[in-house]
Length: 346
Image (spheres, rainbow, N blue to C red):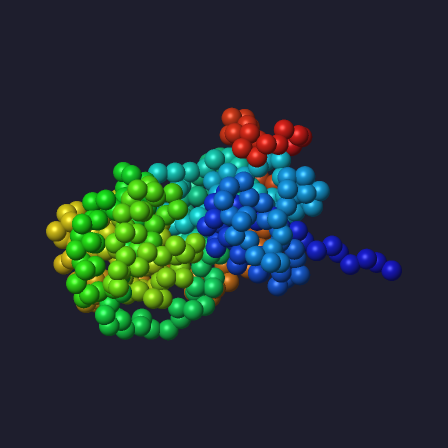
């Protein structure tokens, strides 16, 4: 009597806490298909795992023999078994090194037409990775919740203020006095949240602003805040692209890639009028937001995780090989070995 095929094993690899929000929808999709998912962290995140989630050591990963290692990080241990799959940790916000190939991955699962075209151009040139457009797994639960027309503006309106941590792109210090002033009169409610790598002194300053009109949120998954607010204020953060998928406006300060989908300003004095315009929801702005959202993530079905798994199956079925070998990457591989503390065979 023949034995049933073993469950497919998938390793979810993280180096930051936000990997949990990005990869948990994949865990759910893997389990729904009868597969098994386990985790490996070489940075923060393991302490936030919940009952029923499995954490492996390096030795356990190698013994477990996953068919794929899926990550939102920029690199992955080459000595782990399985196809190496990159799902990204956000959208291209105009920062350097989003469209950047590090030589670790066999398969890039892109979020939408803009990124797909850019990565395919590189793949055709270098030949050592495959590109499949799948959508962003992190958004699966979110997409299932935001169907239907744009909800009306809250009364009072609620503003989400979010800033990137990069000092050269962050507007948090520049706009601090304006946020402080505008969060005192009660006309609008504010929710503030920052990237986990934000300068601790800046974070402390904004936490000290908390009052009945301003809350500092420490959610690991910023998507949880989106239904609560009417607009986002930011700078050059990939989270603003996620927010635009809601159809709601975004006010930015000196964004590195401004366009008609944003209300971009370059002086603190423009901040309040820009917020007022965003809350008025001018039709031409809403139309530009919809067009932009379709270019970066046209998928509204909440099934991007399933498409990632399909892409992995297709890659393996085609032989799990690309036309050319990945680069040796000796220095980067050495740094990963040192960080994880593994010096055994590849």
